[in-house]
Length: 446
Image: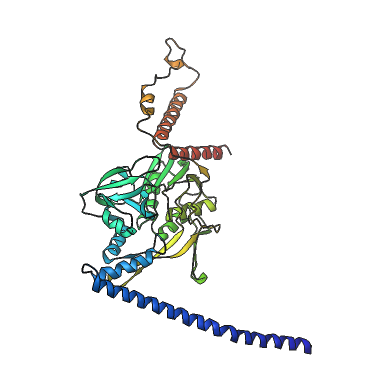
């Protein structure tokens, strides 16, 4: 026992001695680090004074400091930045769903501005801008070397004014110009329609209007079909949705889940992490759900797709999403400006981070690209119509069916022809609807 106690005491003494020996260097390192920081701040002040006194032209000190702050933030990642008072005010307006501009969500990649996605029904969308496009010039002025906010400023202007954007697009040999007329962007967060017995919820952005629009739109569509018993499933279309408010992504996910984790966020300090869980209540009442995504689905869209996929609540169809798995916190600053700072990564319920990886669909379905010069549509229109037995002179009638049965067959045929038309317009959506019809048919047989 004495030996044990001595060994324990010896260990304690050794530990105390080691603590004393280590603490000294640690304190010295911290002191040296602080001294280095102050030296760098002195260097910044020295450079600032020299610019102010010796630059070839007189400078605006306020703009110079703001540029330095923005440079510090943008050096961290593409999503951190300084917001001037005007930019901060614009951002607050955008989250409410109405603002002036072109209608594109952009990020920065290798010095160029990259389109995350055009927003449905906006001037950029109508002009043919696509997810993945690179913007190299605005009205002939190169954006190379500008930070993202500076490039966005070039694209801003009075409503009704014209802007020419030079675009580099994969698969197109030469850069080309796109002319866009600026307009007031009024975002309809959710557009709802029915395709046969399927409800299609097209979510274009996640702003303050998203969940209320989704809830009311789904209710109206279900009533239009005569009740949830007549609905075979729901398509949640998140393609080209650049994201938005985390709170709205959580609400939309919760709308189709009865329980379980939706998303978790983890910051630099583990204590700052949060978990968000679903409450009871599924607006779709358990009906089959298909989520559509593509390379323009980012951020909040990926939270929703990832949550519904991990819980096996939805089948995710389309192509790999954008891969923005970070959370930005907007912090108000003096003079009504703000700082957008990346403060956390988010994780799907299974614990996966989709940062730079994206959400992979359960079923990969490419959207066919229609080339106007291929002549495919012209050939289809000029093709000889097929003849059937009913077209032959003197063909026998089918008298084995009642009028009601014949009417039902004709209605089903008409529905199938409408579905075929939709495949030409939107192959991915048509695939999702066909998938829901198949799931519904299995349920009926069971």
